[in-house]
Amino acid sequence: MVDVRRTLGRIAAMLFCLQAALSLSWLQAASGLEEIIVSYAGPSVTFLPAEVARQRGFLREQNLDIKLLLTRSEVDLAALVSGSVDYTLRAGSSFVSAARGLPVRIVLLGTMKPFWGLVVRSEVKSVTELKGKSMGVPGLLGSQHVSAKFILKHYGLDPDKDVVYRVVETGARIPAILSGSIDSSMMDYGEAFRAKKAGLKMLVNASDLHALLAGGLAVNIKKLKEQPDQVRRMLKAMTQALKYIQESPEGTQQVMMSWLKLDREMAADIYQMARNNYTKNGMVDEPTLNTLVTSMLAEAGIKKVTVSQLVDFSLLQQALR
Image (cartoon, rainbow, N blue to C red):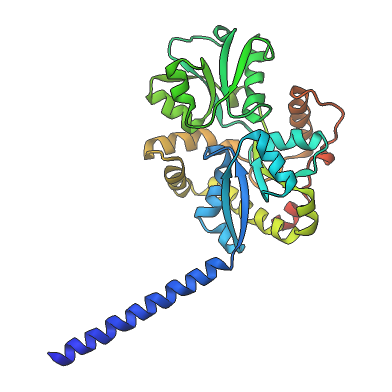
């Protein structure tokens, strides 16, 4: 009996040592990953490819450790230009910034359509009822702001005069409408579904009205020139994530459930709404890109800018090979 106990004790000790060694090995491996800081507007289906790349290990395979940093649109581009962040997932505002001469380039486009809609109180029946009212957006001149202006114009309102825009962060918009501090808000699908459960409604699904280049990957020109290998590896991970979203509905929905705090039913519904809004490999053909960029910049009052001044797909093309 004593020998058995001694044997079991030795086995337990060996297993403990093995577990400790594996843990140490994992920690050493993790510490060897390149940490990159990526700014974004908060967890949403627009930025899902980056979280899929993280949770499914595509970034780790490229020796990268992503740290997502929540920022406002106005702060976001200043941080990217200064080098305080390595990348931003905001493609829409990055297009505007690049067009205004800031040293940033869009290197991947993750979306072709918006992943949000206009949310209002249940008694509001039409967009025209919002004339003279307030609307929440996550940032001025960001993608949701541009989309809001498109929706208002489509329904005959003057988007620059008929609505007062208020910057309200993700998570605060539902309480803001319920309390009456704002009358409506742009919300991504996840927040819009929560709003529905709170008694609000999505009056307009933006993807029914227009295409939009909202989510993607933008980088400082200096990093693009000085660290092309890192950018290329980042692009490989992101393109793997885009492929995974198309081919693995169940796995993608699991990521959505954990990241966006959704139940299974909501994740499945949002996935079906969102799946075809993503690009297949981060690329958009030139004619479509020209049309969308021209329209986007016109909303910001910018003209006579060529797409080549805004986008650099050279490393993406290499990553796709």
